Length: 312
Image (cartoon, rainbow, N blue to C red):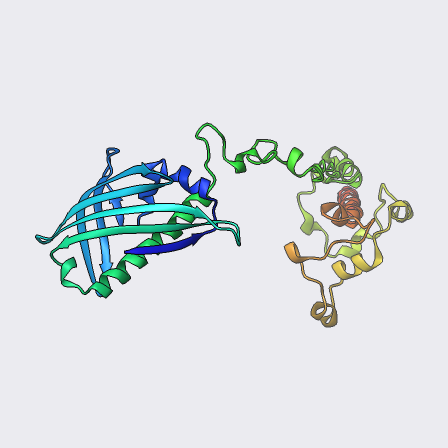
């Protein structure tokens, strides 16, 4: 039989591929070579609605401008045999780039392959040669990569390197330095600590019998060591807390404020610029209130002590 197939390859490239028998064997559809380097293995042949598997050998030899392929095998499941002699010649074409592969060969078969008609055997042979030509085009189109040459992906600048951001993406800004955290406790805490020293309230000790006074009104006439006017003046000198914040905290929020209050915790909105946040904002009004309460306790203690001395 004879057959021709067009290839978008030069005749020279095809002839150079025929010089490598292993490369040509990879293009034969259905052929699986055995390991060891010899052109021997199994080949599955599709004909009509049947598939026949042959086991045998394959050999290539140059002849003129082409190559001659000789194969012989036997059925894996059966008693049939087959023998092939095929000549392939690449010829350049003039009307377009590429070449044509001219096939000419003969097949001698005994067994299942011989049971099919001549038309079925010819159709199976043409289909097999067309698939061989397609595989040959794909084989020659793939670039040959040297084993010592690194793959192209490894040649990209900086990819996979420890500092790949510098050569590959130079516009990435550096991470900003963390800002120092503000002081957690304001200066009012120190004043509160000074006012809370227990050394100044020694006179409170010794008031053992508070029931000696019938009513609290008996303390009104006591001579206190600290005048009320001085206490009021000291309170006026303290920094005033924020009116809105103190009113909401000391008095409580109305129902309308509760309904429209902003969320707290992690979902709370960011504070306005310049507005204190955290424990310092609370101590800004809590420190004066604690100082006033401590001073009042000192005054009451001294008054009770002096009243007790007068009664004795």
